[in-house]
Amino acid sequence: MELISSTLYLIFTLVLIFVLRSVLAARGNTKSKPNKSKLPPGPTPLPIIGNLHKLGNKPHHSMAKLSEIHGPIMTLKFGQVTAIIISSADMAKEVLQTHDLSLSNRPVPDALTVLNHNKFSLSFMRVSPRWRDLRRICNDQLFAKTTLDASQALRRKKLQDLLTDINKCSEIGEAVDIGRAAFKTTVNLLSNTFFSVDFVHSAEEAGEYKEIVVSILREAGAPNLSDFYPALKFLDLQGIRRRSIVEVKKVLAIFRRFVGERMNMREGSGSAGNDDVLDALLNISKENGKIEMDKDEIEHLLMNIFVAGTDTTTYTLEWAMAELIHNPTIMSKVEKELQQVVGKGIPVEETDITSLPYLHAVIKETFRLHPPVPLLLPRKAEVDVEISGYTIPKDAQLFINAWVIGRDPTKWENPTVFSPERFLDSEIDVKGHHFELIPFGSGRRICPGLPLAIRMLPLMLGSLINCFNWKLEDGIKLDDLDKEDEYGITMEKSQPVRVVPIKLTEQ
Image (tube, rainbow, N blue to C red; front, top):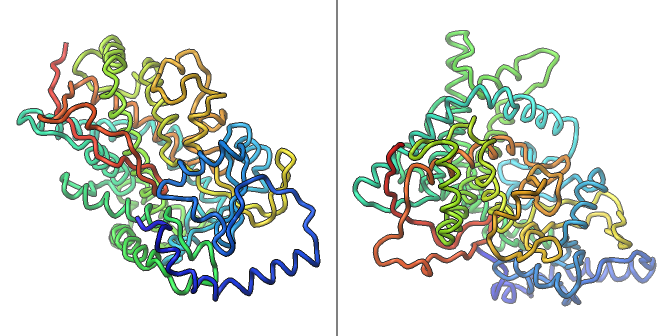
């Protein structure tokens, strides 16, 4: 990942050339029209670069430390961009609920403007009638309860494929890369739901596809001079747009092939085809008087869901396994609950999920300490907005630090300790109603894939624990398994979780 570090100082001259005029103009305007608004506090910005030098390689960590000094609502300057950093549940509620309407739109990273993806992306489109149409498709068709209930057999089959792969490793004593195995399962579940086929057939293929997704998210999440200094966009000084084009083309090419083949099949036979999501989207595009979707929109919508859904689910499962391996007592409690409810050695069914409160608590605690998107996708102020006595100026970008909110000592007892028990007698859920735990966001921009994610995670994690014991590879000690993270848009583990499965027999 290319982050703003020493490279930044090498290009100060270029930055100065392109922004000095606008900076001086802004100062002139300030003198002629005094700004009476009160910005939230923050560290004093340096000329030209503002506070970019304070971002570091892990902005969610850096911003957390700054919030200890400047408070839960804080102003930073990222080049020419005014950034408002939100670091508490109460302030997050102001942004995501109280002022959701005025703060619903998002700035688009230059990395995601490639191939016009921003014009079709559900995550970054402006709130508009078209955006509402696409949200309605997701909520009423793709991720509706009836749709998910009808596809339980498919998830059961993909789960069994995962357990079969792991069983093969157990027979030869080979370690499993939990993240790669989870990614293969997640991507094939989505590809079968959408196209009725597996995308990947081996761990190697899963690794290759995962690297494409990771690359897209890393480039989109990397601090980018093109975003901080709009006049520099055409230079693409860090090469982020150039690399993003390559990776986005790879993903769109996959979807373009599937969409093209299905359209040809439908034209040839006159039938709907496989009765999957792709057919549903193509049917929508044909319905007179209803929502119309062209081929490009379908391809970009599919890319949006795949990229957003595969990585976040994968990392959450990997973090959960890492925490359980580090906490054998908690692992034992999960095992005991699963054996009592499901039966030892038996895969978890969706009908079991509501009877597994401790497993749910483990997943919530994983979300708290390791939110899949540590800095929620930023919002952009459409007008001046007042929050807690401060003015958020029009065009400012708001970043909500879900990572630090989950570790707030005023909301959580022993906040750095992994303790699922805190959720056993708690009404806090992850559906955007409780702002101290917002792994999927909240408000009108909440992640549309939440209903699928909260089904898949208990199935996968519960079955891995209930069907296998897990041990470290020979020569690896528990202390060797670090819990450090890497920052992209999503929160990747710095080292993969590799553990050896030992199959359990049914009882």
